[in-house]
Image (cartoon, rainbow, N blue to C red; front, side, top):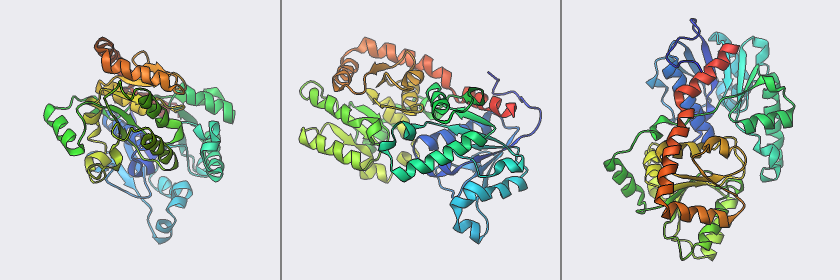
Length: 395
């Protein structure tokens, strides 16, 4: 692993990123982009970083770094067709800026960029749409497949965020293993910082959080498996008084979950925090700066996903000193290591057992918190930035 404070190249690199998600995405892809860009700018300040973004928002502040620069569409035609600029025309800007390396942070690189001579890296987070195509619209699967395969075949190097993702790239797209490098992601370092009692109280009052609660963070979609958590709560109707706080958005699957909740008298036990006016109007919620307090006050975080590329909420919880219940399949054991309480995500009974264990077994909780802290050290921003920089140096 390279030292994060060492000038490893001796020469200036001009690195551009597809920064759409950094500015426009509030979930996993956005967090990955923002954390990586910030980490590289901090630990490798000798290089210049250019964020190619169709639109700027307040989700990321590039002005906090003297070596980070925004690149946005210029001219009426380009501004009108921003998606075309991002997927193709941005090459003109890259050449004008003498960019050495272009990093597609979320599955894509511009069409024809190889002809410019600019070296390319693409991060592939997961191929969930290939494994579960029935959970996506048919047209979306076709679009994703075309973009992902193009990026994998034409990028100089591929970053997979887990062994699971690397295996899937090889399986579905027949990419040579030596072209794919596993670089685990980190999470926002604010999760490592202990929140003050005053800050906890502020957040608790703002969002009207209960004294105790379990926490679910993630989109409310079938793969994330919120319904089986609710089924576990139904099994514990008279045994578990600690409610579940849900952070995430959803549509059709959420409707199914809400129907189950109402039909089993669980409306007081399942709190959809994202639906509350206090959350919808809070910049601290939108930018996730209030999330460390929400994590740290939780009895435990539960993430029984059926399949993930990495599972960033698991890492956020480990950094926060919050015990984690997660799935014993997919990449979750990579992320959780020996620190998590693993369950069969298809079994509400196992989920129910885990909830009871974390709510009653103080010795177990203490051990999980200690193991979680040590395991999280494998995913520090400095280590993750160093791994990415090693990839750049291979080019």
